[in-house]
Image 1 (cartoon, rainbow, N blue to C red):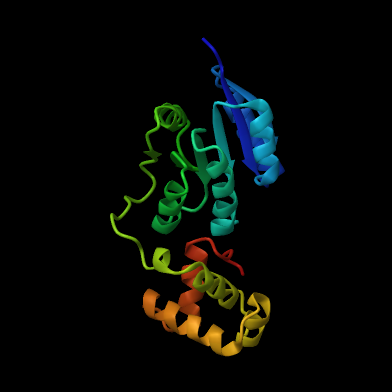
Image 2 (image 1 turned 90 degrees about the vertical axis):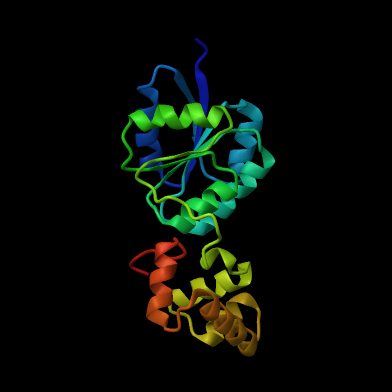
Length: 208
């Protein structure tokens, strides 16, 4: 039987080595290479023409998904599976939205890997039973605009209104407008609550 040609894309060398060792225990898989997620990934896919892409984004959260989305848009027919430490409804929904076919938490049972691979190659989605069932409507976070998400991230990192304005090249009044709108959409009106939400969806790390 022809082996499944696989590329691993992530920013964590040690984790990548562990994922590669795990995949190589499956005799039906041939790991072609590990590469940083980004332009390097697209270049490698163009050269190697893999059958499957494995993604691991670590704590990068939505920033990592945005980088992965650029890769998947360039190769929409390439099945991909995301290994993640973030199990939130918002994060998983976003991963599927950008074109990821399978989502597995790092704690998933090894048997789930084959299920995810089979589903992805058929063009179907696979979600680990460990992950929450997705709502059919958008979550409040998903309804935020990209600008509002940027403001939220910087606020959660402890930046002042002036700092946020400087980072995004906006006026302080515009930042205040975006802050008011995102608070209204999220139904959260205190900074501590915004920080918790930002950590849950992967905009900032827990200790940020």
